[in-house]
Length: 53
Image (cartoon, rainbow, N blue to C red):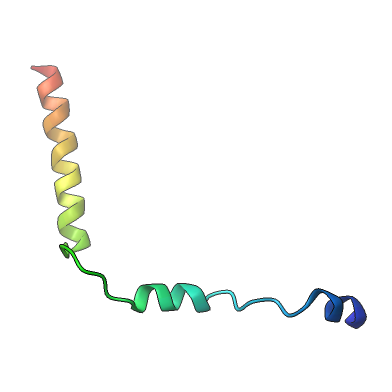
């Protein structure tokens, strides 16, 4: 087994890329997740009410 493992090479770290991705700051509008959820639910409710009336 160890010979087969050596031929394939080492496996990359599983979460190293994700941690680096979330540490990076990006430019743009920053919205809290709670506010985004409230806005989405409000839009759904308004569209359902508009379809009923």
